Length: 130
Image (tube, rainbow, N blue to C red; front, side, top):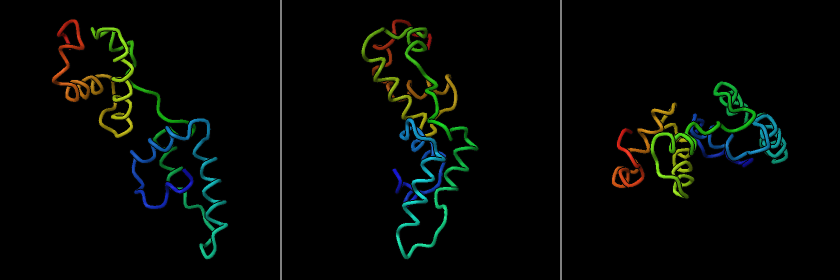
């Protein structure tokens, strides 16, 4: 992860995904690793190449850890989804969409899933109120 800043654009999606993958490491700690690695590679000039990523993470409130999932299994069950292992898969797909910036709230998450699973949507739900 200490090489992410090389070759990837500085975008909200990149920072959200990086913060999510860092798990127990904050963006600031990641930035220190990047700086040490960068400074130990002559002829690169000393600097803080991770700082723009850290600044954007702070702006997005993901500097300590990745974003919490907007959609959870209980939301699907409350909305009428049949309980079962598919709920975990759906939640993982929803979180990936969230990290990609496809939605920002629960209604957006449900709309995103409706579009993603349009063929199977009626099979997933007991009632059609969604």
